[in-house]
Length: 111
Image (cartoon, rainbow, N blue to C red):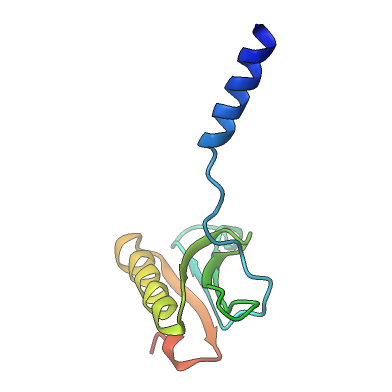
């Protein structure tokens, strides 16, 4: 009886764990940006990347430096909107300073 309860509890606990809806992309980034907070060490800088889908029909992703998917979109336009929303959040709300950025596509430019 105890073993059955333990197995049932494990199955229930496992069902509560959420897997990422979209896995990180193992592709070269289309854009990158780094932010820092005034008065903090450069080691505290945060870095984000836009990555294209590896296969047709996949999702574009916004990922952090450890490949956590923060946003995704089916089209480059959808992910560009998410990219700019994230930038607004970081700069306006969180008061971070955009240190550097780069992009191979005009939709990800901050200028």
